[in-house]
Image 1 (cartoon, rainbow, N blue to C red):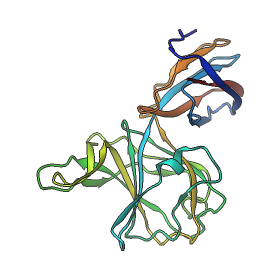
Image 2: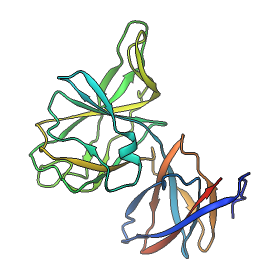
Image 3: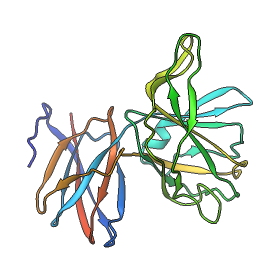
Length: 253
């Protein structure tokens, strides 16, 4: 059992369970519960877990208006009533995601309005950090796998969009050296191959840990941790048989 180190009293706690299913070892992606700073996890059998990077920035760039609109709150607040609107996103527009650390992909929780046009995503990573007078460069990711695709329509169902971790991924601001935009992070951006459906919603975005070397969690053991929401945004969990993870979220203040 981990040692509790908070210097403030507990003021709220909420609980939930998640189920890992299938002998093939289904992955489960869980975002931190907003406004909570600690967690207790328990399972009666052994399982595995890794911390996901934080989603530091989440921006939609409209090429026609030359404007960036931030949707980080909508992508991380855990509320079904708010969402990232990619409505009629064009082939010249870009959606930017900035991570605290390199990520192997992102889990998209698609909202009520699913994407229903034949389209794929062109995904790129920041391959050159900003230098004097230069704009950062982006390069196509390799090994794309789109778990949100259904019958050729991307962003049509909940799923993980993954890629091969780029060895040349650079941490950078967005913009130029003379006019940097937003803080330094690891940027991914995508644009669609065709104009997206007029109503396309993403409820939640969870970055995925950069490899599969997950930690080993012992059976019938309570794991109690403080959460650093500036560095991490959630968990990826793995099991090789059906099992239920019991989760208690803690808030101190």
